[in-house]
Amino acid sequence: AIWMTQSPSLLSASTGDRVTISCRMSQGISSYLAWYQQKPGKAPELLIYAASTLQSGVPSRFSGSGSGTDFTLTISCLQSEDFATYYCQQYYSFPPTFGQGTKVEIK
Amino acid sequence: QVQLQESGPGLVKPSETLSLTCTVSGGSVSSGSYYWSWIRQPPGKGLEWIGYIYYSGSTNYNPSLKSRVTISVDTSKNQFSLKLSSVTAADTAVYYCATSLNWNYGINWFDPWGQGTLVTVSS
Image 1 (cartoon, one colour):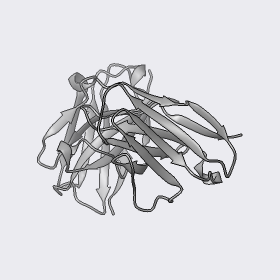
Image 2 (cartoon, helix red, strand yellow; image 1 turned 90 degrees about the vertical axis):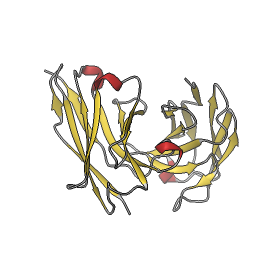
Image 3 (tube, chains in turn green, purple; image 1 turned 60 degrees about the horizontal axis):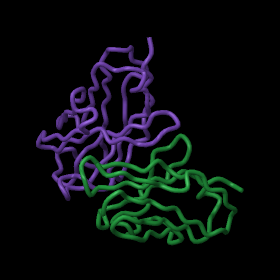
């Protein structure tokens, strides 16, 4: 099984900040990684797939990078609607698994 | 675009079987373009993929739940369903249905998702 380590678990930031969230794998997964945003009481929404491909309709302030074992989600200029929990998900090996989540809260 | 809606009992007794249905609109479960998944999230915790079904009836389940899970599809109603047997309090969670593309045997990213339904296991 592939172990996923998402960090930090909690991130305090202000509107306008640039924030980065890390997702590290116990073994290489090429670019088989997705990122989701989840707001309280709502279903996760796909932001990025294939490590760096922005899902249609997702603002360009979101970007993803990395391959192999280390991946990053960056929000270039945090907006009020971006305060949420973010999850990474690997689909390189079966079963697909999710990171533990990073909650982005208002500082 | 495809939209999904979960339905089913919100309360299930321990040792009984949890049954949920996902109704698909804006698309067809008979489409070979998608795989149809169930994913769950215990309160305050992370996400766990349960399994999927393809329109042909082919299924694949998370090994951690495989012995208790059955996913089926009803093409006449444009629905797919989840049954989880012998439930305990640990199965209390929000259950989501979601789709993935027909690529990499259905193991890829999930989009879209249903709104989710909370199922509580309690006597």
